[in-house]
Each structure stands twice: as C-alpha cells, then as structure tokens.
Image (tube, rainbow over all chains, first blue to last red; front, side, top):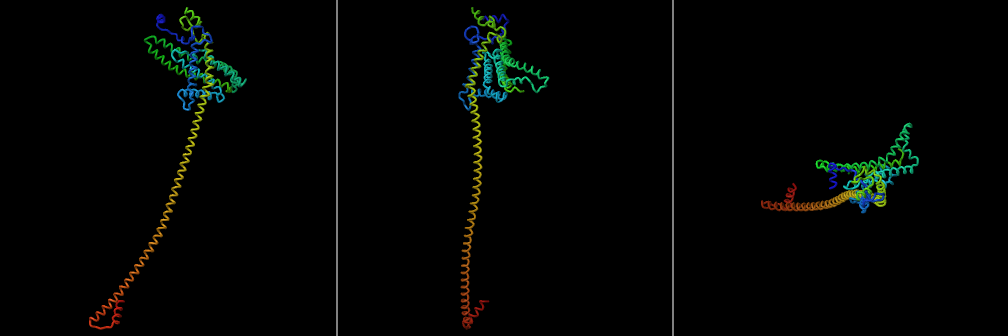
Length: 252
Length: 182
C-alpha cells in the first residue's frame, strides 16, 4: 500500500531501471564486504552449477551416441575448440581451457540473467573489467614471455613507409591499450542496457492504456536480449582469441 | 531503526527507499565483492572444465571419430570383399557355361559316333536282308521258269497227241525250248 501511494504521488509511473543491479547480501542486512555472500554470489554460483550440470553431469555417460545434454556440451566444446584453432592456429590450442572458461562463464551468466528476478553478473563493469583486463594482462605477459622484445614488433609496421612508422606505432599502441576497455565495456554495456530497457518498458506497463504496447516491447527486447546474450559471449571470446593470436604471432 | 540498518548496510550507493543512487555498476563499495566472487567462480569453472569436463568430452569426441573412421574402413573392406565375391561368382558362372558347352559338344560327338555305328550296322543288316530276298526271288523265278518249261512241254506233248500227231519227246522238247528262248 505504501509503495502504491508513493507511486501515486510521483504521477503513477515508477522508474527504477537500475535497481535490479543493486548488490544485496543474501543473509541479513550487513555491510557488503568482499567476502559477503551476495546475490552476485548466488547467480555466479548458479552459473557454475549449470556449467557443472551441462558439462559434467551431461557427459557422465561418455556415450558414443550422445544424449541431448551431452550433445549440447559437445556442441559448445566443438564450437570453441574450432574457433581457437582457426583464429590462433595449432599452437593456440593449449590455451583452449582458459578461453572455454571465459566463454561458458559469460554465456551461462548472460542466459541466467534473462530469467525473471535474476541478477545479471555480466552487466557489472567491475566483473567485465576483471575479465577484459585479465585477458589483456595475460596476453601481454604471454607475448613478452614467448617473444621477448620482438613482441614490440606488433607496434612497428616494418612494411610501412619509414616516415609513417612512428605515427603508426603511436596509433597501434593507443589501440592496443584501448582493447581491454572496449573489451569489457562492450559486454557490460550491452547486457546492462538491455536489462534496463526491459525495466523501463515494465514501468510503462503500469499504465493501462499503453500496457499492451509495453508488454509487446518487453517481449521484443527480450527476444533481442536472447540474441545479445549469445552474441556478446561469442564476441568476447573471439576477440580474446584474436588478442591471443597477436601474442603468439606478433608479426603482421 | 530498520531504516538505519539499511543505510548502514547499503552505504553510499542506495537511498533510503532502497533505490539505486546513480549506477550500481559504479558503486565502489560493491566492487570488491563482485571481483572476489568472480575470481572464485572462474577458478571453480576452470577446475571443473580442465579437470573433468574437457578431457572427458575430448575423449568422447576422439573415440567417436575413431569409431566412425573404423566403421567406414570396415564398410569399405566389406564392399571390396563383396565386389571380389561378385567377380568370383561371375568367373565361376562363365567357367560353368564353358564347361557345360564342352560337355554338350562331347555328348553330341559321342551320340554322333554311336549313331553312325548303329546306322552302319542297320545298313549292313538291311543290305544283307535285301541280298537274301533277291536270292530268294531269283530262286523262285528260276523255279517258276522250270515249272513253266515242264508244263509247256507236257502241254505241248498232250496237244500233239490230242491232234493225232505223233512226235517223239525229243523233238517236242527242243521245239518248246526254242520257243521259250524267243
């Protein structure tokens, strides 16, 4: 009743599209410190559980003719394995488990976030920044470990005209350091925007007149988000592969 | 009291009504929590995948492709065998045909030989019988001629005596013999 009167006083419409991203402790109302089990813990845990169910429980039969669940696991495995092999080459295959970890985490977190009342962990910039900068740092270190200072040849276009080389090098360096930012903001921004838009439409659904349109809008955006969830996981993964390829084969 | 606990709990990122102040994504108070649990989740997922799931699925896929390759190879082999068996069958059929033709020819030749022998025998028998018959006919004819001569002589004697003539037997016989020759 109280919320209803509040809503009335604000003119009938309540928009809190970002409230869905508030971090809440699971137990009690204590302060959120780094180890507190929160709704983030819950939904990341559910993602881990879903991954466990699909990949471990689903494949427990080790069947030559797979069950449905095993097929899903094999499909994702084959998809990512082929992507890593195609983009980074044969010597990139040993990094396949890491890339697979990234992909399945983002994929399952994205899709779990599409459940009503769920929490979208991948919409948090801190989360995607850890992923993006993690990839960036690992790939950079890997490049230096594998190639030493030759890795810097990535920025030095030896086949460009000599005058242009320093300018190109500056541009290359800038674009290299922008990578983790765009890498992480892209994922968080896409997921957050979609979920916020759904909430905005849901706010309009409170008005009787526009509610059919609002619900239609929610449905349409939801369908779009189903696509975005998969595509963003794919984009994040394939960019990771591309960066990894740069570290493995720095020559242009 | 309750409001106060909420405020303590939520810190600077949430207002008194429980709504977000600004973007929750940018609330520094919560970032440590997100990062910590993310790292935990990633490590757990990595362990699950690299220790259990990926080796298992990789093994299943390898086993499957191996099985498929083997099955295809076995199928090829069986097909090859079938082709060979068909060729052998065709060969056997052709051989059997040739043999059958040879047997037929042989049998024909044997039959021909037998037939010739039997024909020759039959011809000999027939010619022997014919000769015998001819002999018999000749004998009968000679007998008939003798009888006719005798009858003619007797008749001529009887006629001569009946007509009142008298002639000796020698003359009459000579006359009849001359007539018979003519």
